[in-house]
Structures are given as structure tokens and as C-alpha cells.
Length: 159
Image 1 (tube, rainbow, N blue to C red):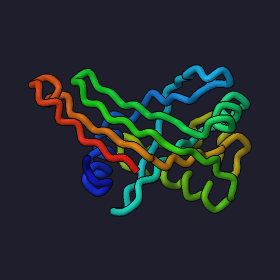
Image 2 (image 1 turned 90 degrees about the vertical axis):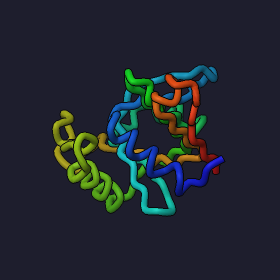
Image 3 (image 1 turned 60 degrees about the vertical axis):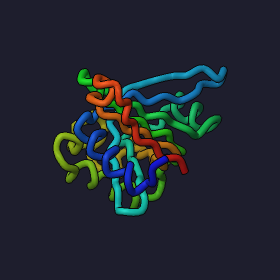
Image 4 (image 1 turned 180 degrees about the vertical axis):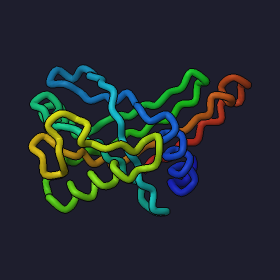
């Protein structure tokens, strides 16, 4: 098993190149429910945190209220894959909402974007702009080349 310091930078690099992930929650009947989302990740050398610019819809609030875990799975046609299994927290404080907004606006290409392009989101104070914090407890990174050459060189970290 690898350390967070070994896996997190590789995870962020791959996730930010892929940009979009399939994110899964669990519904009220314990069935998986997936959607496509666009997280941005921050690695400061000791802590990895993900952020999703999203709306706290009744469905998402219900799923995460019952089971606050989210799985983010990234994939490319070259079979590069990375996964983050996360605890989630809805962000309600104004200062953090502004920080997350700015993180997306000033994020590196291709993962950064201006959230105001979403209808109804003029700025971080807009109703319906409800950032979701992701705190990974499991990471896996596997370059597709390792799958194709039979070495299956996945790096894994667990909290």
C-alpha cells in the first residue's frame, strides 16, 4: 500500500487531465445512482480535498443525507483510471463558497471554468450554488499502459 503523499499527486494529475468523472451515491433503497460531475482537487502536500460546484437538489441531499459517501471514477479510452472514494460535506458558509467559486474560476485548464455559465449562478452568493466538499478515504490510480502490458501497476492509498 502506498502513502497519500505518493498517490495524491498522481491522482490529481490524472483526474485534472480527464476532468469529468462518473460519481455514484446510494439511494434510499441502497441502490447505486451515478451522474457525471466535474470536481476540482487541491493537494497541499499533506491533505487532498475535492470540490464540486453543484446544486443541493432534493435528490442529492437525500442520498448524501442517508449515506454521505461519494465515489468518483475517472476513465480514458487509453484505460487510464483513477478513483476517489470520499466522505462529503455540503458547504454553507459564505467565505468557503467564495473560495470554491474562485478555485473554479482560477483553476488550471482544462479543469477550471467560470461557474457563472450555469444558468442562475451569477456569483458565489447565488441561490443554488452549493459546493460539495470531498474528503477521500481511498484512492486508486492506474495508468492504462500497465493494464495493457499485464503489470497492473495500480497505486492504492487507504486512510
